[in-house]
Image 1 (cartoon, rainbow, N blue to C red):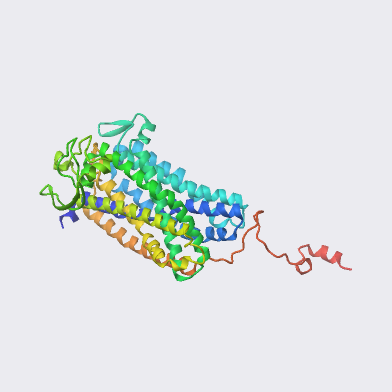
Image 2: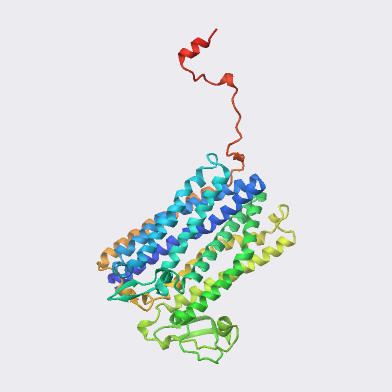
Length: 484
């Protein structure tokens, strides 16, 4: 239990807890915001009330995720001051401004239009409301862009140099457009969108299996499927390109991802371990099941390498990522889920083309609906695993190659960090139970298909009471003069 007296380990555990928990909520809001733009746009185009009711129903889950995301995101950012003050002092001129942009540009934009999106259905014109929905979705995704820029800079620092332990910005745009930022933003964008699509599809499949509002939820399932036809394969390709960047800029992370201990020189076939058990002290795998030439095909689409793949032994032990087994299996879980999504998308698309997803037949596709329900939580797992690979694989650096994690921690007693870590664990467990409770209530009630649909002047279709039954609002003197 020596880690209980280690400020660095406890601070890392606290940030990991808050980051992993917080990540659950913006994943859905960023992707579901785009879905809300789609269904509301379909309502405006077709005037079909079903799409209006979709927008009203799914926005309830959106705001639930938004609220918890705000409540858990703010404490996470405060830790840069409370737990990582040395890091913040060293890189604050750039890193702090990026987080400030995220709060002032993206979060405020999303929060500012959220009220109109939720409560403006009968108060503003439908096109004004649609604009608010677009701004909410744009703000949510812009927030992700700023966060990914900041984190990518930690992976591949650029745009300046460290002078006396402090980062001095020389080219702000070069720092923003660091080598990792572009593909990282794309990878996360498609990850959040893909996760949201399969959550929406999984919830829709649950209703269909229950025999509740099958016609209604077959629409949302088909919308999710139509988008997944594009998103799922593109995400696999973007993930592959991101892996190529890891090979180029963070070879130690690639070695940990593949549990590769020995360097494979150029011109040789590189095997790929499907499963293995890394032994960090022995600097080897205790056992493994490998595919000959598999790593070569993954990296270069051929068995022999044109460039060497450096193993972990090529680096000093203090420069290697820790927990190789965690990085190794997190990467495989993420990749496996990505291919499962692609396979489920392909099977579902075939069934759709065969006419098996019509309102009359979709209820009989029980095995397919169960597969979609199973897929609903898998996107969250894939995203969390991806961030584990990204951040644990960056260790022992908090800024890759420049500042070690141990050098960035605040000078606070370990007992203080342990207290706050315990507090966060208790509060976040309570918040998670609240989300499950309120989310279950939303799903149990289902959509309200009796909601009146606004006309395109922004008014509700209401009956006007005859004038003789309305109260006379004139002054008493005028009423007396008007009497015979």
